[in-house]
Image (cartoon, rainbow, N blue to C red):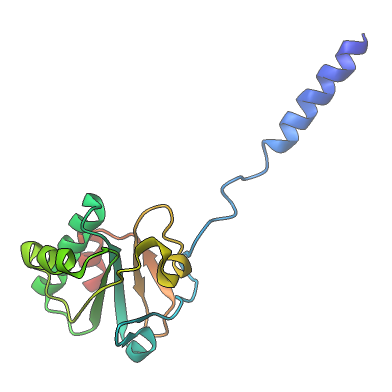
Length: 159
């Protein structure tokens, strides 16, 4: 009989904790958040105020982020949209690797930058990229409209 009380207590605690949404506290930036300002080389995100912006964070050594960056750049070039500007930021250690990757991937956005401090940079930390690279679609006020969009999803936004 005394074990029944303990079993009941364990079941009750398990039942109550099952209602707690462990994913509720999302790490990083999410849709609806204001994007942190960027200061890389001579680029300031605040200079793009009033314009829709696609921020793409990637690195040549990270195949999925590199492929997505190339696909997004290509889609934007095909669409020929003047309403959306792309800022492509690589976290490669060496600028020569970055330049060669741009050439091979045919990346030609108005703002292709490299952050050679990589994962130790303030930019990497402010965008919470510790779990992989990401991209963000920002409205004219710098509010995140979408996160980690594909080229197909970008086409839908442009239409």
